[in-house]
Image (cartoon, rainbow, N blue to C red):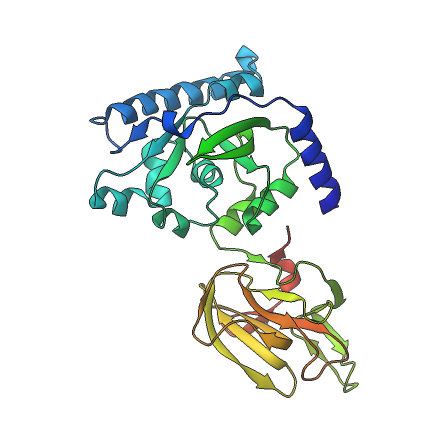
Length: 314
């Protein structure tokens, strides 16, 4: 399914003419997010006009192509450190510009709110919407790309001498799953390719023959497959266990912990801070195991939860 969508996506880009590229040098530069900055004043007027057109598009009959043709992009480069420390917060920036944080995040290819503060400068689009990159790289971009069924408008931007191509969907926003992924309130799958070999719940243990509650998911995958952190967090425990084999435990916000068992190799260290999608280990068959697979658990306040209800895949 992934390959099919990718082929369609590439075909779309190869057959539909692109809008003229906006060169990096032509981006009007905003230094302060207030009306004393001439560029910001003009930007605010552009945003107000774009929002008016989106709101009235059903009445006026404007197409997505018409709206995308009115898109302008500004470069925000804070003039001093005080400006940078406050205004590069995702939510403050969204409120100040009147542009949703998902629009700012997708254009600037930022995977989570903390990414904003690490940026020296940002591009500010004048119109709400979603920017889908031609070549998705992060988990968030892959999720957006595979999940969208809407037709976007191809645009090209030249950022720091590098041409970037996007599909722009005027007025679009994150789906609930995409929003949870961006805000780090949801969990990604720990493997890219897997087969569910044992779900959460009561079962007969295939090694001991005892009937008990299986407190996680068994995800069969080839030995050596990469295992990823399901959300941002800190590695609070790792080692070897007679049942779990080589295991890693990560603590997340909201009193959540995730456990990864039967690993063949560790790719992280104790007390390491990890991001969602960080490589932490490799699939193995250590401990109480009948073959290579990942035993994965999610616990909140110490109680095992069914990961199948909480994980979302790309």
